[in-house]
Image: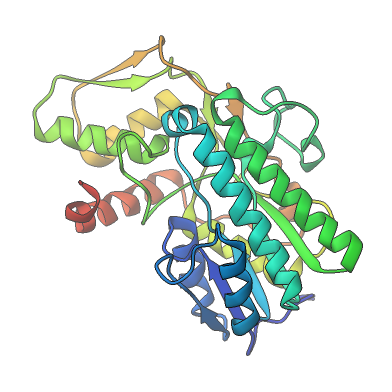
Length: 318
């Protein structure tokens, strides 16, 4: 029997961060859910401004919020811009959660991040590991902000009975990803470098790190489907992981990306560059027990991301 704690039919749902990769995928998924989708661009609403956020939510009064707005980036961006990552994400998280409660929003799904987990957490990582140790140093600022927002949502649940939950997606990739060489995550960064190397007939591509770290990579539309599934069905104080239960090494990922884009040159791993966490695989057993599982194999997802890049490369090449 399909037990829902929140029926989306006829509801008004605000997707905060609808232009980002995850937010856009959530909008695509919600478009089939029989609800009204609310969006607002950053030119109309700066979520780092408390008064603006409160004013907008007091007027819009959605029934539910999917909190996908964030300042995001890969290892380079996180390690070189820690103040921005900490400040902006703290402000966005605090303002949205508090303004949602103030406006009487019944339901909020806050998107956490797998980097919230301690660097030495037992693998696969269970939700009980949150807060049990320091996060990986290269993205500590982002992790601290995400931990704070999850904690804040939890305190509003505890003190006011607000039905706010945190979901923790694994590493996501797919259409709408950020392909900026300095700001992107591992899969799009690799893909862009290999496309450019292929087109320039370069004999080799350099990849940061040893190639040994392992990452769980989830197609963003699968993640969006899981987020909407949990929006309707999950209500508990504890966060819940969203992953696929399988990981690959960075070397294996590089080989898959090379095959996807048709790059035939040598892959050179620069072990002098940071690896990040040695492994990050989430235990998504609680999500699986609710009856959800991912559908998109990594090779198929990379192909979809590549096709999206080819269609939009004029926009993302700047």
